[in-house]
Length: 241
Image 1 (tube, rainbow, N blue to C red):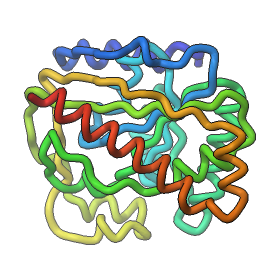
Image 2: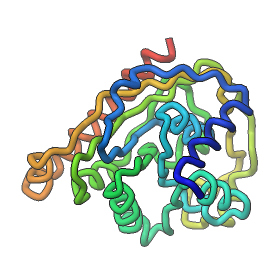
Image 3: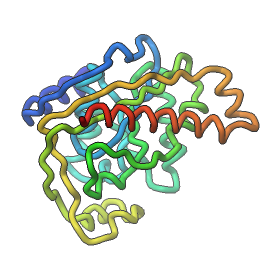
């Protein structure tokens, strides 16, 4: 697999789905640096949209079940370069170690800090849920030079909502996920027109790392998480109206 094939595949799929995409603030994308991309998440298209908008392959951490389902596994890992998270007991350490190796080689790593919930419930385009803080711990803990966290908002302007498959079907592949142990269907959001708005990068400095390894760890993690959440929320409001 060539390094650019995930980008080429993403562009081809976005075009095949006839999705109109508008990109803003591309000048904010850090150059010649390790970049952790953080974004809101409502659609199976989000990884494709972000790669096409940032004009770069992005190695996304994705849900454990995506590495267990035949055909889906080959697409997300073999074609798009994503890395499925491990089962619950090994998830955090595996995420940290895989992401650090990728960032050290100056590849872009992508994270959706809202987790699974917005993918299994219908949500409105201009709202972003609470962020899990794993990405902030990764950024502050990683032994990576010139690391920037790049918040990006995906603002749906026109979409089609439909039902994909029963949630309980996914519990066969990941019984540890409580959100799959319920009735109902996995929603599918197909963007017809979408705006991608790139936020201000948050650079990790030695001062941040010093605070993280000292008594201010909780504070610096909260600051980083809130910066990204606030930036994406503001950009969503800007993009959706």
